[in-house]
Length: 129
Image 1 (cartoon, helix red, strand yellow):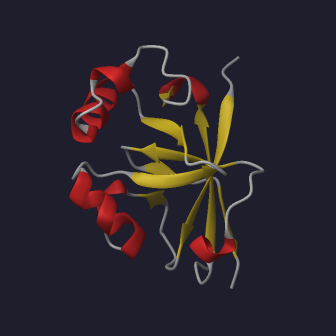
Image 2 (image 1 turned 90 degrees about the vertical axis):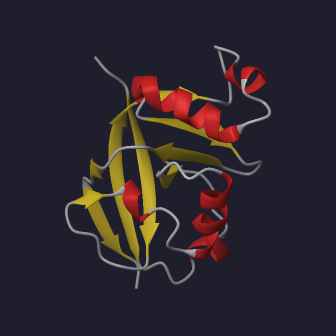
């Protein structure tokens, strides 16, 4: 049986059916990331962790996605040593991961972030507004 990872995506606008990475770079947080690496990706948080409210304040929609855990490369562990291999180029690192995985998970100190490179259909939406 495949283990599922529950992810949360926050948005200011209501999304129809699928969360699309092609919208990457629209908000202020991802605009900076897009300059670092132009690869389209959508950002998610993992289940049950603390997320600073100032990150998601005013983001009225919380989307819940379930994805196969094995389809995500875990940069926290980095079994393949990709961080050392691509240490000077985040773009090359992400493009390499995209060839073999739907996304990656990494840690930003207080919380984990998951990026997905492909559009996914969400399982549930919660209106926080």
